[in-house]
Length: 133
Image 1 (cartoon, rainbow, N blue to C red):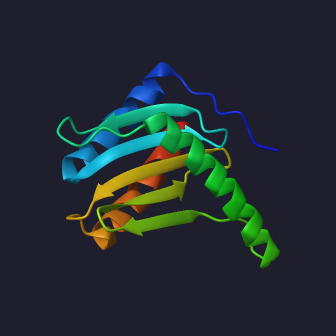
Image 2: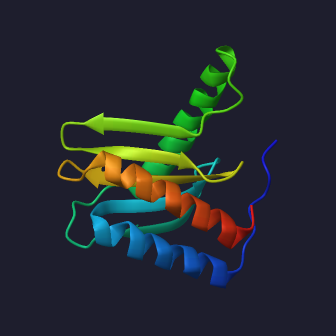
């Protein structure tokens, strides 16, 4: 059973600022913090990028992550902590923040995946400390 995520307005604002400063300004097109039910908690994006249906992305990501968790258990793993989709026009990177939170990062094709993976790892730790997970 999942924990219920509760945080203050100040915590959400701090996380939103962190995502904007550390990921959007470095080239991410969209960054979203969601729960495992697919509820969108935070979304930041660049103004110039193409519009995507962020709510659909959140719901589909949560569903896909749930399936991945079950697949992990079949092969003897406790849980999945990372999901990555690379396509011709960009990629989607999903990171587990806590037992109930996922971070979705949408990147364009011009962005270095390796650099962003390192950056997202650092951001994940900072978000965990902000919400005291």
